[in-house]
Amino acid sequence: MSEIVKTRKALFPEPVAELLRALDAAGFFEQSMLIGSWAMPLYREFFEIDYILRTMDIDFAVRFVPGKKTRQTDLAATITNLGYIPVFTQSGLQKFSRENFAVEFIAQRRGGRDDPLTFIPEWNITAVPLPFIDVLLDFPFTAQCKGFRVRAPLPEAFFIHKLITADRRRGEEKRNKDLEQCSVIAPKLELTRLRNIAESLRISKRTRAAITSSCQAIGFPPHFLDLQP
Image (cartoon, rainbow, N blue to C red):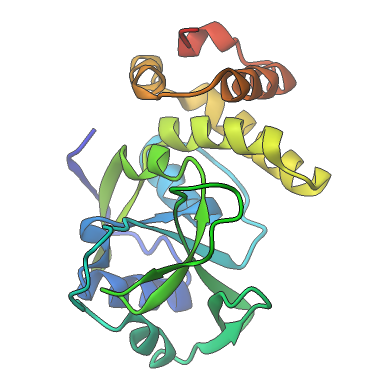
């Protein structure tokens, strides 16, 4: 699914819509995307997936191109100009905070678990390197909302990503949240698209076991993904 889906509805509260408009104007959504729970308003509108948001964290996956040094837009400045305050974690990650909203960028991890933060020079931001982000970035759709376009992962890609991450969570609360989101999405999955995405993945036995474990936890038949050994 690569076509643009359209709506005239205001799907996001104005502080979030304002941020998405600014990122769209900067060209951010040409390669990168909105991920996490704030993709759910799009899923509700276009895929009839109803999920109650309970987070103020706004997460974005950045398509990182190694070796690219040309500045496109200073996103740090763009975001702070909207009234967000830069906040640095102990690890050096720069987040942005405004009215209880917290903005964070995430990139595909290329090395081991101890990878340092990823600096994205073309956007002047830092991103947390995490595994399996490419599962989201490689299977997008684009939504034409009221006043802006936003790119997000297809629900089937989001579903597989959450199946993997849930089993890796160290905290029970976050694991349960991942599985809850999977449970809500599961009845609305397009199974051919789900299987095609699953078949495209190169995953280890450990990851395959994680997916199977999460499927069993939510009562979803693992064979629907047709994961090959």
